[in-house]
Length: 392
Image (cartoon, rainbow, N blue to C red):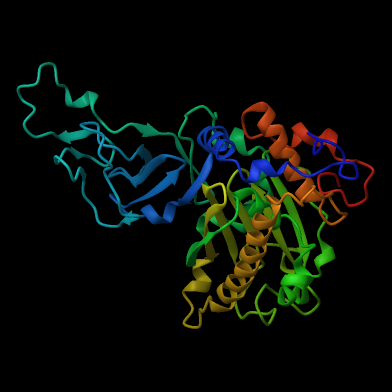
C-alpha cells in the first residue's frame, strides 16, 4: 500500500476500504472482535445487578456488576434456545437475569439459577449451562471487552497509553452529559477527521478562535495502538466552550501546563479521548454499515465540580455538540465523494501527519490481521520532518 511510505511520498488508503461491505465485515472480525474495544463506563454498573448492553459487530454483550461487586461481561444469549436475554440498553435495578422466552434465570455472576421443566432431561447439569463469559477489563473507569478472547491482557494491548493520561484521574470522573449520533459515513472517515485541524478554519470558526489550528503536530511518541498529543488554548482561554472560559476549576492533579492545552488521543479501534483542563470528553465509534456509523459522545467531570450548586455542563456540551455536527456533515460529504469515478485519490498535507500515521496503522493492521501498534509503522514516518506527530 502506498500509504506505508513517508508522508511526503504517501497516498491515501484506497476508496474501497470505506465502501466495500466485505471490508467492513473483515474489520468487524479482525479489528473489533479480536481487539479490546471500549463499550462504556463502569459507573453504569455502580450497584449490584446494574447492567448495560453493547453491540460489538454481530455480538451483543452484557456488562453487569455482580453481587460481589465484580464487573463481568457475558454474551447476551440464553443457553437454552439462543434467545437474546436483554434488549434494553441498560438496567439499574438489582436481581437476576431472566430469559423472556422460557424464564431460564441467571445469577449476576452468570450461573444458571433455575430452569423450569428440565427435571426429566438426562444428564442436565445447571452448572454446565451458565452464561458464556466475555473477557472484560477496566481502565480508568472505561470498560473494555474482547469478544474473541484472543487479544491478551488489556494493559499489554494499550501499551504505554495509560501513563499518558493518569494525572487526569479519569476513573474518578463522572458523566455529566451524553449525546448519540448516527452519521452517514464510514467509521474510518470519522476517525481521520478527528486526527487533524486542517479543516478547522473552514468549518469550525468558533473552535479555531479558541485554539490555534496550527498548534497541533506535537504528538507524543507512541508504543501502542494510539496516536495523539496536545493543542494550545489561545491566550486568555481556559477551556473549550463558546466563550473559551469556564467557572469550573481545573481537574485536580493536572499541571499548570495542562491548563493551557487540550490533549486529543485516539485509541484504536474505537475510542477518542479529549482531555480539557476542566473536563474529559470521549467519543466511541461503532461501524453499522460501510457508509453508516454510530457515535456516542460523553462529557466527564470531577465530582467536586459536579457537587457545586452552580454546576452547569451546557457550555462544554453545547460547544462540542455544535462542533460534532459540523464534523459529521463534513464526513458525510467525504463519504458521498470518495466513491466517485472522478476521485483519483489525494495526498497528505503538512497538517495531516496524524491522518497519515493513522491510515498507515490501518494499512499495517490489514496486513497483520489485527490492530497494530505505532511501533510497527515507525519506519514509514520521516524522522527528519520537523513536528512529525510520532517523533519528538
